[in-house]
Structures are given as structure tokens and as C-alpha cells.
Image: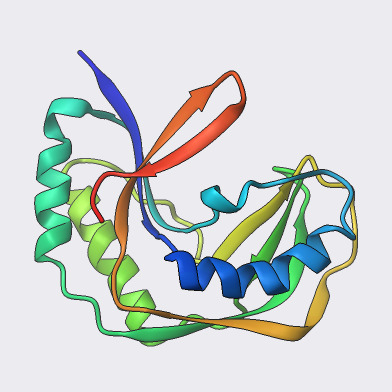
Length: 169
């Protein structure tokens, strides 16, 4: 059986990527490690994991049926996460509309018998991998993004590392 590694995510458009780049690039250069390619920037909402490829259409259908109340997300700090050794751009508050979306998507995966993550949802964008330890920084210039949609994304491992590809846009 063919499988795909899937997750639901906020997937920035070109305008959002430009806005994020203006904040991320200068701070990421201060962190030792491997900067994440701009094309891979995203906010994971719900991780699904390995999933039968022939059932991905069901997830796309459920995603299409999901209404998203528009919201703003304010990324206001850069944090070092020791276990995965990454630097992440983090939003310290979760808008209620975003939490409602995450709860709804967790319900979809729960109905499929997939156990959602138990930890609290923390919106973030991984910007540096294999990062060296540093202290959390509050950003002088925060990145504010507006959202009204999300994507089902496939994670593909290759010789150059992992790349992410939305299955619907």
C-alpha cells in the first residue's frame, strides 16, 4: 500500500512569505545552524503522519468542507527548542479562531482513529535546523500575518532533505 506523510498547515502565500522574510532573514542569520528554505515555511496545525495515499481524497474533502474564520497571527519571539534543536519564530498567543480550527481538524483525524498530539498548540515556523543553543528573544519587529485558509501538506524526504508540498491550494 502506498502511503504519504501528511499534515494540515497554514501555508503562506507569496505576499506573506515576503513579509515573513523581512523578519526571519535578519534574525535567522544570528543563529548558528541550517536555515530552512523559504519555500518550506509553514505553521503545522495538525500532524497526521503516515497515511494511505488512496484515502488522502477524504482529507481533502473534509478540508474543503471546513470553514475558517479569518484571523491574524502575530509572531513575536524567536525560541530555541532543544529536543529537535531548532530555532522557531513563535506566536505567543493563539487567536480563538485559530484554536477552533485546530480543534476541528483534530476532530477529523480522531474520527479516523489517529491520536492527536496531547501538547498545547503553539503556532510557530521553524526557521533554522540543527541550531545552536540561544536565549529566547522578543522581536523588535514582529511579523503579523492574516489567514483565512489552510492546506493539506505532504512531507517528502529526499537527498537534499525534506520538502513540503500542498495537496490543495
